[in-house]
Amino acid sequence: MSTFAQHEIFLSTALGELRIRSFCTPDEIRQLSFDRQFGTHAHYRSLYTKRESLERKAEQPDTSVVLAIADSKRIVGFGVLAYPDPEERWAKLEPNLMMEVNAIEVSREWRSKKIARGIVQMLSVHPMIEDKVSYFVGYSWTWDLDGNRMTAQQYRLMMARLFEPFGFEEYQTNEPNICLKSENIFMARIGERISTEAQNRFKWLRFGMTP
Image (cartoon, rainbow, N blue to C red; front, side, top):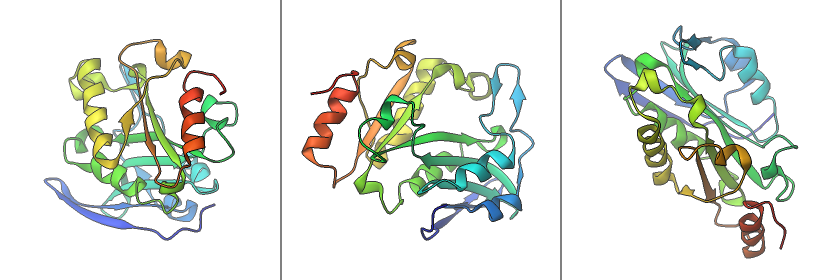
């Protein structure tokens, strides 16, 4: 479990004031409940629907679980920055060099209120961010297109615009799952202290090669 200091911002919305907090601990998460709109819909299923899933993530080394909290008790948005699973391509650059934004979601009723931007902002204050290659993979089949009333291309553009202000850029890759659909997107942020050698290895890794 991480021992990094927490950061918090407050966001005023038409539905009330929110706290968006980084490095939420398992004990803190245990005191909260998910907003009722997280769950399974006709064409969409939330990635996390139980507190226990976020608690397990918060127990992992260096992981930041960011929560948007309403009424001091309800989770209306979340984001997770964590190391990739060992079997994934992105874990092979070198041990613990890449970290994935492996979840970001806002409850349907609370969308279009700059909450996702606040979550990415809090993920980006991770004290090791400049020592990591942070990345985000967007798979179009996981997106709530109905809830957002968007096409896949519109959603893709929205995600790019969400991450770009925080130093993320789109990169090409031949990773098979990403290449399945043209709407899918791979973005990364290369920390300031990443060596030129590691940056070159990242370039080769995107195409499943070694220099």
